[in-house]
Structure formats: C-alpha cells, structure tokens
Length: 321
Ligand SMILES: [Zn+2]
Image (cartoon, rainbow, N blue to C red; front, side, top):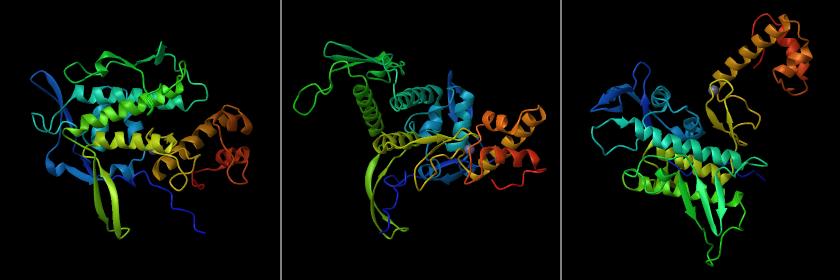
C-alpha cells in the first residue's frame, strides 16, 4: 500500500507576496516625527510564495532582536508585514507596528518552546488566584491599539462546554496552551478588519482538482497561520546552523537531524567545520577530541572519528557534503 502523502505546510494556505529584488530595498524614513518603513518603487519587487519557500518564517521573525536594523533586513528578505495597507501615508509601515507584532510573536513562540520542554518553568507566565488564572506577558502597544495586551496581564476562568472549569486549579501546562489559542484567535480577529485570512475554493492546476484553502492577505497573517498550523500539527522546527533561518522538520520535508536550511548553507557549514577541525588539529587536539568539540555525528557506517580524519587529511573541501 502506498503511504499517505505527507502534508505540506502550505497545503491549506495559498499566498503569494513580494519582496525586493537584489539592489533594491526598503528604508526607514522619518515622516512627521514617526519612523516609517518605506518601500522601493514597484519595479524593484519580485513575487514569491512564503509558505512554500519559508517553512519556519514565524520563528525567523520571532528570533529578530527587535531593532530597526533587523526589521529592515527581514523586510528586504521577505517583504513588508502588510498589516498597514489602509493607513496613510501609503507604503509606510511604522516602527511601532513592527515592534508590536514582533514582541507578541517573540513571546508566544517562547511559550510554545517552553511547553515542548519536559519540565517547563511556567510559573513566571501564569498563576492561579482562586478560580482565576492570571497570565503575565510583555506589554504590547498602547490602549489606542489594544484591548488587553497593553496591560501585560490577563485574568480568565476558562470554562468547558458544560460550564465547568476547564482546568484543575494549579495546572499550568493546560492553561498555557489555552492562552496560545486565545492569543492567536485574538490576532486573527485583529486581521479581520483589513487583512483577513479568508477561506476560498481554488482550482489547483498542479493537482487538477478543486482545493479548499485559506488565503491570508498579509505577511504577518501568513506567519500567524504558520504558527497556528504548527501548534495544530505539533510540528518540530530546526534552526539553520549557518544562516539561523528556521525551517520545518518533518518526514517528507526535511530529515529530523538536518542542520541547515538549504544546499548552499549546507556547503558553507561543511567548509566552516572542516576549517574548524583543521584549526583544532593544528592546536594538537586528537581526532576524537575534535569530534567531541564539534559534535560530529556518525554518517551511515562512517564513525565520527573517521569523518574528522578525512577532514583533517584532505587538502581541499571537495569531499561529499
Ligand atoms: Zn541557512
């Protein structure tokens, strides 16, 4: 029997976006005392499909350090957030808009990461007060843009369908998952007004059949969809050891022990590791010490020490990568 095809992260979503071509780019411009991210002229863009090409974009975004320089780098690589379409001046996205969404993504992905740990320290994020759960998080935006996130605290007593408490007092893990659901739904609600994630039927030329998909209408919407899908599917992600981009680890998409996001990064990383091995060798470390230091893993029937040996011996990096 043929195995069922593995789901792709893009399967239920359909989305094309545009990013600057090489040589063109966004820039920060001060307009009436506000920093706005302004875009290059129309001809400076190229179309791409973020959900197909960037399987862990929400984590790459979350991992930015929150400075204008990093937001600019991200915009030049992936395009604008797209949440600010209907505001003046056209084309400009305020720094606060980037900061607000980035902070939230950073916090919510931190919760996800902690929940995946065996013994997460969740006490710093929530506590029980009688029947109420008090969630704590970084303050986001101001009362002008937010209904609750600017307070840095949310008090809730989630109930099940019978109207009884959903969680046992003292439970921290369940309510933290619940908070992620609550926060992401609230995010989707915010998009509803201008950039909704709308369901639609399309005719797939590739599969030659009808498909039911959700069409996000902003890059941020795409990232929140990706996040939601990752929670739904319990998917693991990896961080590229070379360029620090995140990508989805899943059978049929990437091998679970994969270290890099692309062939190019794989080659760069390989050359870097060979150089590191040679430097350590020159310092007098043994092959087994080098294997340990660089966490070299066995490949096929080749032991890690043999791999180090071949790196140290070879003159140029023309070994298989
Ligand atoms: Zn990479």
